[in-house]
Image (cartoon, rainbow, N blue to C red; front, side, top):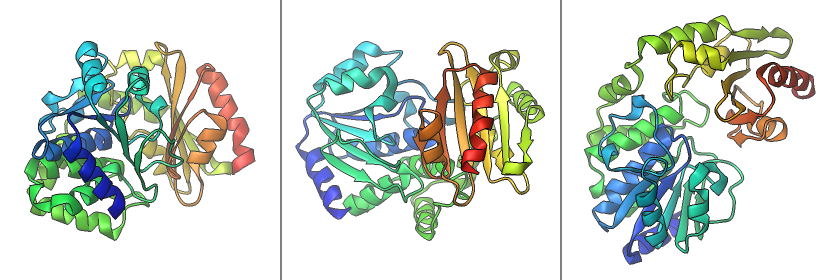
Length: 331
């Protein structure tokens, strides 16, 4: 890790223009790591910009300096200009260019040096400098280690706030298995740097809309238990989403309700997306059941051992039937 950090420092210092990117449909870890690195690098090299594929949910739209982000889908010309003219591009919280959606071609056509900082399994080989640690619970935790070793004195309250948010959201408020004693040490340090843990939790989790809670009620009504295989699953159709005025991010965390059931160690949520013609799937597990391998094998996905995503081009009933058919093979 130390060599990678030295290489990153030298690359930033020598770069004429820097672009920081993350994956499509960015979550707290993606936005937090991107903004934290951006705010830090800006103190060293002002020619830096965050470019994200598309906007993120409203519960993250309070983060400091988030109004300085360029979005590829809504400001395409400016986003392409930054990518094309940058000689150093950071890839944060993703390890394959297929994860960036419509931004993929622009990145593939770039002549920049790529730096990957990511915690997902099986990274692709597109980056010159790769910092890959699947054993770490969030990319934001990795970003903290990079910045602390680089120049800890430059970590201020906005940077600490962004990193705290990313770690908090990607560790399920510090309850997922990859949360370590080092994670908590970092959280303590971030609070010392000015991160207001109470305000961060409130801004992120206590801003639910009435529609979102109504949608949660529908999701829980659709919860099904496959007791024989210690599995629970939820389905949400497009019509159910539309009925409750679905907004991006509204189903965040719904899958965990299935995993909270007694004696359940595998939970899934199936969400219809008629616009894309797919069923989006989130997988969660406890213990040794590897949902990353399951998602890769059966549902064109992947992620982490206990948290992964996938997709299906079958309809909802066919997707669920396929899922139920696979269960005896894996559990």
